[in-house]
Length: 192
Image 1 (cartoon, rainbow, N blue to C red):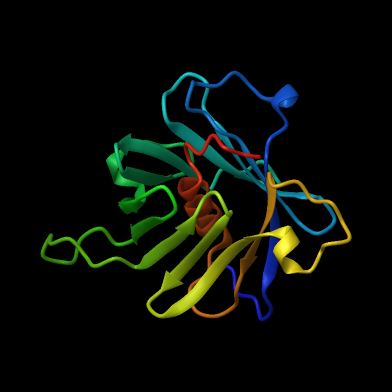
Image 2: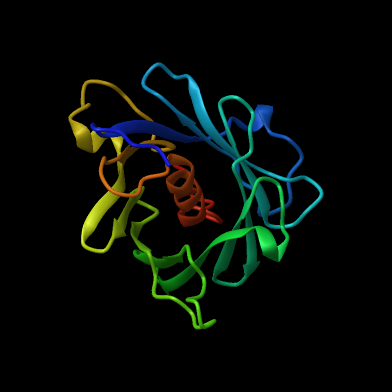
């Protein structure tokens, strides 16, 4: 877990197609950079699998892999695993309309008696507007937004690059947040 006292901004963009590795038809590649354009995290498809992505940090370490196992369910595993024993989180899409997506995120998948736990995080937003808010209870943990909405009218910023702000306090593992954002935008082909 990372513990910071100030909000952290990362800039999210789709990977340049000319640098793209061989992907499945539903593959996506995202880059998360800091304000100096240094790579902090990347999410890339695994070429030999369908709907399985690796999240890597700037040192090349892979904290999590993400698998889209069912129509509206994603699983996050430790490192490059896909074994059930390495399952770290499950994300379920609960709302899917043209203008709105909502997800429930479960970190501890069962309680001590084997019953499903309540969700730990929620994600809500609109992929077209690059808006996603991640909540833990009633607190906002992280939020994305298009850059032009942040007072940058003098700079031309394409819609395929947007800002992710991770707020301080409580439980905030940046790699988890990046994985959640990758899941939120998974399968979104419209990157105008």
